Picture 1 (cartoon, rainbow, N blue to C red):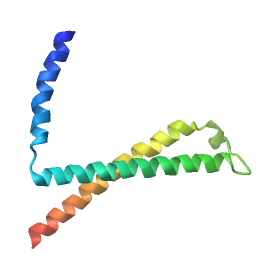
Picture 2: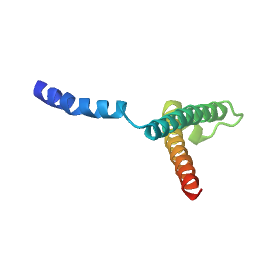
Picture 3: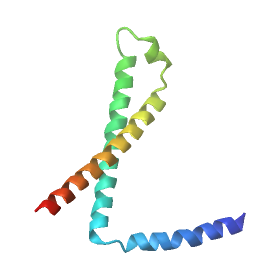
Length: 103
């Protein structure tokens, strides 16, 4: 079992070193994707949490509101926000690169 971890670490170290020495464009893209993904997670989680809170505080609570777990609803919103943020970042980067090539 220990050999498995040693082999895994040996394979992982070159990948980490390769990522440390990325060129400038790749670092910018990575920063854009990470920052948009984090923003998406925060916004998605917050909106799902607020929706759950509003649902529970409504004057007429529905069956759907009672059966939904607020934590899983928040996690679902966070994961949706993560994908939306990453997609938006890749879309923006693709558009910028396309505009750069046309000029």
